Image (cartoon, rainbow, N blue to C red; front, side, top):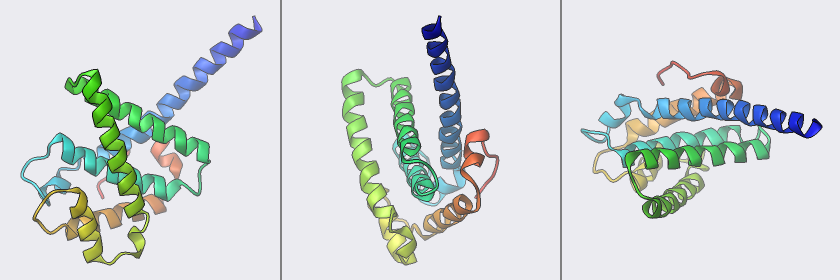
Length: 173
């Protein structure tokens, strides 16, 4: 009987944590769906552009909250994020073999992005512009997008981690 209660409590905890993390993921997706962002560099948004913008949001999120949250919790959020991303790719219709290849590429891109945006606050606006352009293939000036991410970082630093876990945020940056 005790084992049953323990298993039941573990299941409840996992469901709670999934709801907890899904709100973070949905908030990041919500921010990355801002149509104004895409008008800065493309006429239409596509999956790869959305994914890159989502990764930028996630990278800044992790950097902002890494010191205020437990390392294990941030790792769980990272794992959950990429599981959700994998599910999204499956929904598009990719097969198992191509999903594994794509996930490796996406994770490598994300790690490269994390290394570069870790120094974001020390960069001048043109360096931020060039950083974004190194990930998003465009001839357009990305200064407005850099300014958007500066505002996003301010938003993150002015709000608590709990804001992201309670529900989906209804705000524009």
